[in-house]
Every structure is written in structure tokens, then in C-alpha cells.
Length: 470
Picture 1: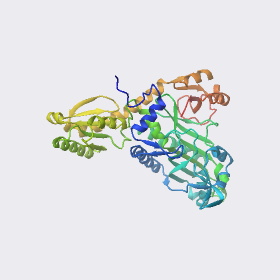
Picture 2: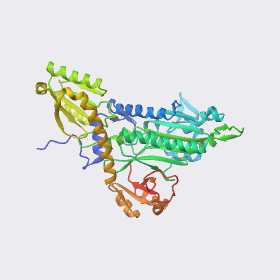
Picture 3: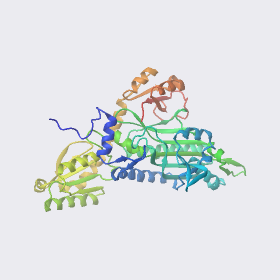
Picture 4: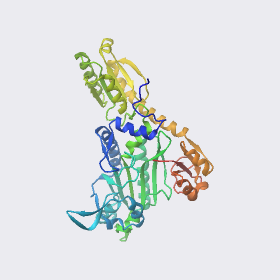
């Protein structure tokens, strides 16, 4: 009788495979309140590495970290009509505290444009205070009706950047720079996901924005996932909160603003982009553990060798763990590390000691081979970079293979059944977008003919990317 697979095969049931992997790789659990999640240490380690890489890029872009309260007076949200309308169905509102009814209800932070503008209006007085570039790492709450761990949860973790500028041109340039140089660079070169950068349609824009820039990734089942967004807010919030500055000529002018964010949704994107029927495959540049050295047997000579190899790899700059817990069967430990997607396993047993070798197992490229144990410190960093490049290549090949050019709404619908469709925005337009949306197919973004981000929705030659999405 064939042995049952550890994970439901992707081809059989992709959503079940996703949930199985989250459980078996010990990434997260469902929280006690519907729609919440408990992020387990290995899953949180992925998020921590994402934070570190993102935070460095955000600071390089000139933004400084700050923190704002999670409780926001309800009256703040009502000042920007489009914003409150967009978020109203998702709000969690506190009406009682300290054993009595509050004089004014407070909203649990769904996003921070309103409360940050309350303080920007105090902090910005003259053109010398601009640009004001703030980032916040925090949790947010959006009451989710159809939760899925990491992808859509009532509470999730994220960063949200908020900036104020003297001119539209400065704000536009900064939002674009975050889109490409911060988010695009991170997702492509660290996550190894071949994201498409484009602009959202008016229907899909962030509530209160004049333009939303997005990064869309194709998951293993051909669906799209919005990995991050950068918004141009224009002067909408500045006018609602009277955020103005004194120009050099003595006149007061409303600031121009941006906001931008990525969240723990990226962990879900990582799983669905790179995972296979054996578990996760973590990009080496992201991995908290790039290599694990496993002792096959518990004799002293083997244990001494795995610790020696671990020390050599650590000295070579590799993030390494030595697994010498030989009271647990070797096969079980090997499967656990495979499920967790650690890029390289280095296995050492008595026979390897005799031969002066170690068995090198590659999680991303696949395969295993004996290698000279003394050469590992030189060999491993090179292999890690090869496998990082391979993940991006595979992501790109999947996107290209499952994206087709279409000429009608019917063809777009058919394309979205297995992947993405590309259709002229002039032919589709808002009416066609609405028809597709009624059938669960959305316009993920608009790109120019050459694949770049267009300046306007209706720019001649614009292409709409349509897909089913998470």
C-alpha cells in the first residue's frame, strides 16, 4: 500500500495544500477569535527577515520609524469621505472602556492616514519641514469575512509609510521610488518573486488616493496576489486635516502626500510562489537558516564533525544551524527541514567521515551529492546564490507561460481560469472591468505596452492584466 503524502498535492487541492503546509511546517495557527492568527516562531522568523530587509531599504529612502496609537477617534475617519466609505465595512469600533460607555467611539487602527495627518498638521509649518518621511511597523485590524492565514486575517502585521511633500512632483517621484527601488527590489532580489509593477484602475484604488501603484505576483496555481502598494494621496487628506506649509513667498499651501505598505501577506505569497509538494522553498537571501548540518548518528566523531562544519560555515557568513538531536530519528528530522524549506542540508554519518565527504542536499534545485567536507565553506555560498537566481527564474517562467494576450471579455475570463490575461484597456474599459468583476475576475493592474508603469489610466496602448486573485 502506497504511503500517504505528508501534504495534499498541489494539483489535487491547492488551498488544502497551502493549509497543510502552514500546519506541518509550523508556520502559524488560527487564533481564538475568528480571522486572527498566531504566528509560530519559524513563521515569525520569515517575517523578521522580511522586516530587516525592508527596513534597511526604507531607511535608505530617507524615512524614519515612528509609532502612532492603535486607537483612533471615530471623528478622524469621517473627515475624508471617500476614505471612511472605503473602510466602513471592515472597521472594529470600541464603544466601551473602563466599565463605561466612551464619550466618542474609537476605531482600532485599520490604517493610519487620519491619525498621522492629525500630527502632520502640527509638525509641518514651513517649507523647511518638508519632505516629512515617516514609517511605522505595527499591527492593523480589518474585520475579515473570508479569512485565510497570512493572506486575509482580521489582524495582521505590516509597515505603513506616510510622507508629506511641497509639490505634486515630489510626492509622485517618492511614491514611484518606493514602488520600484524599495518594494520592487526587495520582492525581486530577496523574495525571488517575479512581480509585475503597474497602476491600479480607479475602481481598485486605495480609498482617498489619486493613484495607487501595485506589485502583483503570480502564485503557483496561476492566481494573482497583491504583494504591496504605494499610493499618491494628492491633497485629499491635507485638506481634510488642514495640513499646510508656509511657502517661501509667504503663502500657505496644502502638502502633497503618499502612503505605502506591505504586510505579513508576503509570507503567504512566499509560500504559494515557491512551495512544492514537499513543502516550503525559502529563498537563500531571505532564509533565517540557509543551511542545516545534520548528524545521522550520535557517535562522538560524527557530532564533532557536524559542529566543526557548522563553525566553518558560520565563519564564511552562512546562516547555519547544527542539528545534532540524534534522539529523534534522522528521517523525521530530514523531512522536517525539507518541509521548512531550508535551502541546503548537509548530512554527515560514519561513512561520510571515512570518506572525508558530506552529503549535500539542495532543496531548491533538487538532488543530492557527496562533496568534499573541507570544501563546504567555499562551495555553499556559491550554491546559495545559484539557487536564489533559480527561484526568480522559475517564478518568471511560470508567469510568462501562464499569461496570454486576449482580445475580448470572454477570452479574458477563460485566461483567468488558469493564469493571467493581457487585454487592451481601451477595449476593456470600466464597463468591461465591472463585467469581469461580477464573475470573480479583477483587473490587477494596468501596464504600458512595454511593461512599464503608465502615467495615466487611459494612456494609449495601456494593457490591463486580468486574473482571479487572493
